[in-house]
Amino acid sequence: MIWLLISVVALVAGVAMAFEIRGALEREREFRASPACASVPVKSSGCLWEQEFTVRKADAHRGERASAEAELLLPSGKPWEVTFPQTDPVVSEMKPGDKVVGLIWHGHVVEVRDAAGRRQQTSTGPVEWPEDRLGGALACISFGLTALVGSLWPLFVRGNQRHATAGAVIRWHGLGMGVAAILTLWAQAANDWPIWSIPAIWGPLALLVLASMVAFVIAALRGDLDDDTLSAPSDS
Image (cartoon, rainbow, N blue to C red; front, top):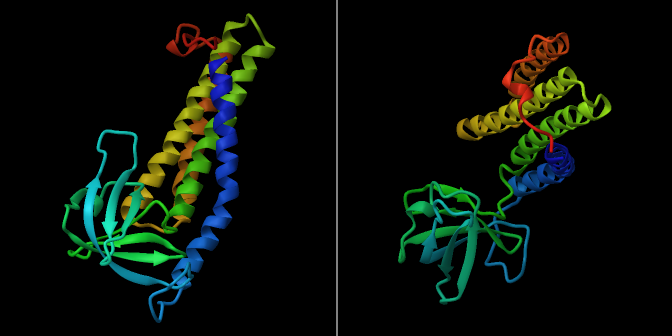
C-alpha cells in the first residue's frame, strides 16, 4: 500500500524534525551570543573569527541534487571545502580568484561574505535551522497523520466505494496541508519573518483545509462524489 507507506515515512520524519527544533534554537542562540575571537583560534572555539579566503573553485550544481559547494584557500594555501544548502546569493556569483570572508565558529565556516557585502550561511551554519525544522515538522506531521487516517479508513470497510472515496479525500487534503506548510516556510524565509509567523500563518490555512476535508468527506459518505475523480486513485 503505497499511500500507507508514504504516510508512515512522512510521520516518522516529521516527529524527528520536531525533536530537533529545541536543539536548533539553542544552537542559534549560542551562535548569536558568541563574542568575537581576540586572536586567531588555534583549535575549535565558540568565539567568532573572520578569516579571509581566496576562491579556488565553486560549483552551484544548478539542476542537480548535489549541494552547492566551493573550495576556499587560506593565505597559507591550505584548502577549505564548504557546502551550501542554497545557491544564492553568494556561491552562485563566486569565481576563481575572488576574495571572500568566512566566519569561523566551532571549527567550521558557518557563513561566507563576498566583496559586495552579501552573506550566505553554509550547510553548517546555525541560522534558520529552527525555522526549517519547524516548517518541515508541520508539513510532514500534518500530511503523514491525515494520509495515515485516509489510508487505514478503507481497510476497515473493504468493498465500500463511498468509504474508499472518503479515504482518498482525506489523503489529498493531507497533502494540501503539507504543501501549505512548505509554502509558508518559503514565504517566511523570503521575507525574513520571525519563527512564530510559520504556525501563525499555517494554522488558519490548515483549518481551512480541514474544514474543506470534513465537507468533502460528508459528501463522499452521502454518495455525492460517487463519480468524482477522487475515487480513482488506487491504494495498491
